[in-house]
Image: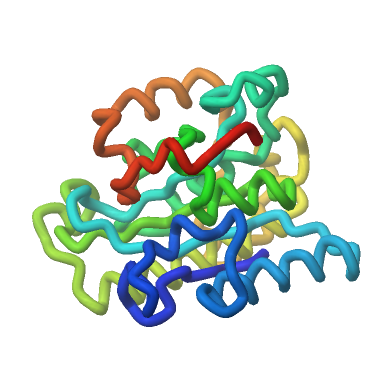
Length: 237
């Protein structure tokens, strides 16, 4: 598991006045040192140490949409035709589903899993494609508050953000539960060995029929906090 934050200084642009979440395909070690170092660590883990990296999560704030939610990667919903010739990894939606059960601020309905051409240089898509990480996400925390759950109609204070971080850690730790390694993604009737016992004994279910619904739940021009398109920058993969 690797957690990353491309905006190390707390803002979107680096000292070169570039959107740092548009530099993950080919970061420059001088101009984008934090991104270059993060990808170098991934390269070492995968190519040298032979480690299996299952999760990558890039942390963002969202200025318009409410709640805490995630963007992920689905081959079925990719802009690139060869992606759609392959099936999705069975775990590609697992962390958001766990986060829904672990975080009071999280909204599964606000998640989407599109792979858009204009997002190829973002962290979640670039590392998903280059390092074959099945669960690669951007987690967005709203600066506007929540419109669902126990914090509905409230702004997110430091207290709620800390709770969300704790909930994310619990969700990540649940990925090590033996029952979740089963391709069927179903929990057994035995109690899952998960901190705080936040998971119920219900099935995680089959997600195949839900992806298209979630991806169509938001207007296309508001699906990502990455606003510039830069379509001319991306050639064939």
